[in-house]
Length: 227
Image 1 (cartoon, rainbow, N blue to C red):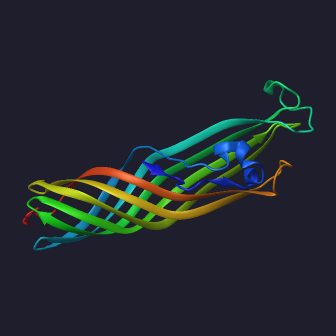
Image 2 (cartoon, rainbow, N blue to C red):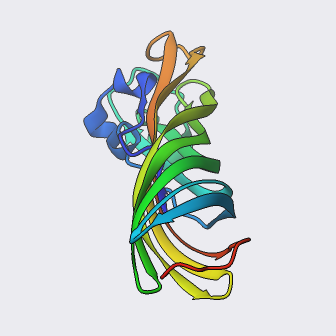
């Protein structure tokens, strides 16, 4: 599970209108969800009960969210709005927001405390990932006009988390882990040729993710420590 964005995405186009009327499409929190999977590699050093390590991972994700909606509004001078609205003096706007997080990688340090065959640890470091978003606005006043603000960006940020790992015997161990990832913010823009709103439309978002994952590790050296 993740959030992309975790702060409201704002279209400069719609923000120049009445956000109360346009509801969640003016300011929205996209709780993207989906499966995540990949591989990792690392190295650990153990001193008495303390374990120090470094590890990196790369994973693909299916995390995404789509928000679609139609807003009906009044008070326009045009008499040629879409007849399906029900009245010539009513017009409608169709809005679609889409967010995706296709892939993510981290390079982290790890500090843990071993007890018997268990390791409890904290981890943190560098995170890199790609975020994709799109905002489409369609206005039916007089003629159908559309504005699309697409965006794709690779960003670097940070991650912090914690987990527990258990030795299974021989060279195998299993772990469960939580990571919070923050890749910062991004803004995409597009020229607005619809004749409504500002000359340039903007969509701004923060790229954050909350990851809960489990995994199996194979150690190329036998487990000789307590965990």
